[in-house]
Image (spheres, one colour):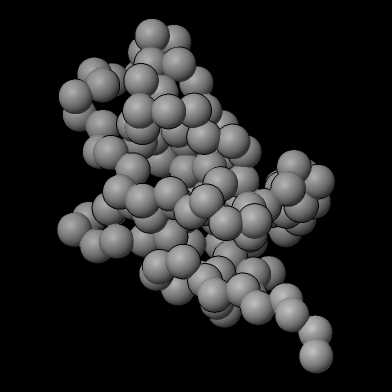
Length: 117
């Protein structure tokens, strides 16, 4: 079991911890539940459950869905977003979601059509 730290499009300065059965890479797009609503979020770190000591694991909500598409955030993208977030004193989640195209912010798997005709 792993604990994933996820950023959400909320005006709060913290990330949120969720549990998942497998390791999720940095930038993976996930769907989580927060205050009885489903939100799109992005994984910013993953640690083994035995290294997580903040509160009991049974209190963590599970990640509802992961996106296996090629539309994950890169580490360079997150570094730039983190710099902008710190420079402008703005939450990282809001900073990231302000820069994303609308399709990545919606529930479900975004359709990609890269065929050029």
